[in-house]
Length: 422
Image (cartoon, rainbow, N blue to C red):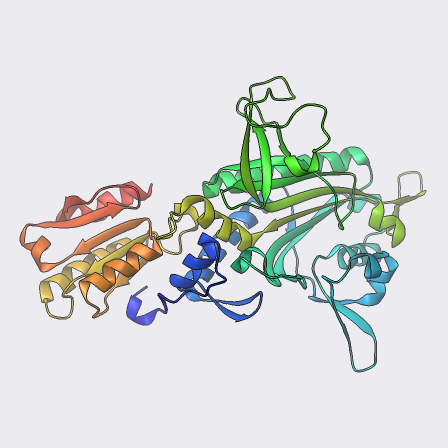
């Protein structure tokens, strides 16, 4: 992509309410722009990163046999009354009436819709187990939207729902999903912890939260340095074992460390909470009516992006994990419109790399200082600078996000970049 054809509205003006690193940097780098409190436009650079997260999530969902669908944002109030959540959910639920006075809500989650779909379309145990998922916009009327997209009224989420004839079958899918979520965060390259959690207004008796570790996280996570043990400290205040930094881990392995965490995923074993209240049942092998066992599994697509910036960035620039960077390589061409040799060299590199990776070519007429400042802010993982000065020496300048500037022979730069990307 050529920057003259792209749209990256970087800015120095940051609203006073932008407290978190991710909020400030996403505004400065032109990833988002606010429409209203808690509601944002996603701009091209931010949307490219979101799409990369979606791709990883889809691949891991398909790897465990989950099937993608799409459900409506607008949901009938009668379904929520049937599950008894119309009044229980509280003020976060956006409610509206159509022209005939019928009640609807804007979906913050989709347990009612999916359970209604299953009871209308699944009638035999032979059609089970089944796991369906979607990636879709959710809406919640936050009492105090803040922290940019971290706590907004509208956000992008992957939610999955599984249906089973037995608890053993539910258990298997639950742990498959647990493993899939772990692979998602490993592929993105983020430090995370999985903790036991409460069901909240979703319900269920068994659940786990996935937290990205970051200093700005709202939750305190205690985890062992020698095992997978981890808990949300605020949920275990009355624990007989002291949950403090340096204390022995309750599982007997290692000692505890306390860090802040940003919740980006939550998985639940719902049991028969929704199937029983909404009469979602099938005939089992003996011809008897059996309410379905159900699991639900959410992961915040847009929240992962913000959490990644919180964990990896220093407050002055974005440091993208390569897996979700909007572009892998940026080519910064100086004097491109005055120097034919520079233009030819950068065009050759651009076309050689284009079939293999995503490239942002800065072919603008901005001053070098502006180009460097913008690319430093945006944080593309690999940067190549080409100018008449470097070409006279037969080299280009290469820099990764974490390395020093290197002089690479012009004739070798394409292969060198491909090797770095691998």
